[in-house]
View 1 (cartoon, rainbow, N blue to C red):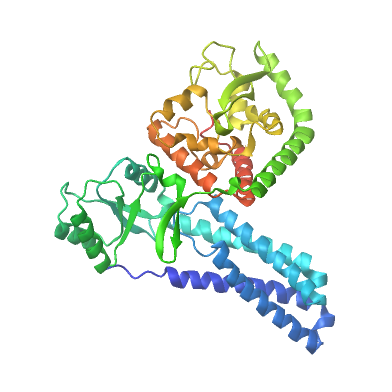
View 2: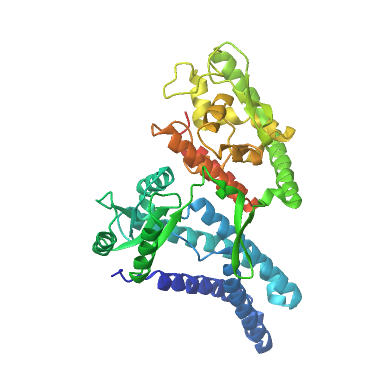
Length: 456
């Protein structure tokens, strides 16, 4: 018997809280304008406006998925949803002010929108991190298990085991051979919520049908793990002709010309601002420190694969003594080749700053999959079947994988870690939006201020 879940009630409470915040901010600014309080007609008009905005908030959440928050959702993606939802909602306030000719909204819309953005962002972030903390401490958990494991399920198991804040407890089925009655007794005893099964497995069709049937009877969720690295999962989306599901070739956001123009325009504007207002004074200081610390050039150029695997010269500040192994040997912990100033530049990621020149030239983007050394790409292309999906967009100075902690050599199995990076890059390519880029940039700035432990 499954434990009683209260997620639907919690979600309802959050929706009500959001509506109350919207109403409270609206009423606060309404009461601030005393001349409106005594005018019944205008009061009724504002009450109607508030009801319309509350309805718009709820309807909009169905599109932005603001309240569809799985426990494995990262803060980066959650912030994207919050910002997108609030931004569209604020446009709705502005539009309602114009269409209804509401004098109150006309004069107060700026402060209403600004106040709503700050309060809702802080409240929703607080709730998000509170839930993460509770789960990391062992509360609000879900029991899960894996059967018929393969390399794809190993990656997922590694993720849910490491991320305590997701709130999963993994139970191991003790028997190699699966007997349906023993499996059923096991998931009942452990109160299993979800069973993960890879799509490519050794189980017979008959046994899989039995597992699915008994899981349905016991209200156990069966989640399938596609072999996203090795098969065509990345290239197709699920579509329908009437009620018949079909797999159709994927068309990613940046395949649309309008989105590509938006991203390129942002890259040019952002890189110009950085180069004009930061690089003009910071680059000479860094160049001087590099020269004083060791002999050699200020900049380091290295060939990397870019868009559609075209090779370009990636610019960095030199952080090592000049050596013949710079293009054949990767950096390791406490690498003796790294200079004193180089260690600081790497720790703060300031060594990457010249890549804004690459962005301006069109070789790179501000946000995208990080470009690797050619030898790393060549090595993993032969081992990871879908590795080349990274080249479907321009490489970036920062990326989703990097802000998710998938950076550098952390001492774990590097092939598994690289597969995680590929999955993060794949997610980014399939789900790109300008809001997601902005969130990744903000998270990168936070990591720079905090210090990234994975930077070496």
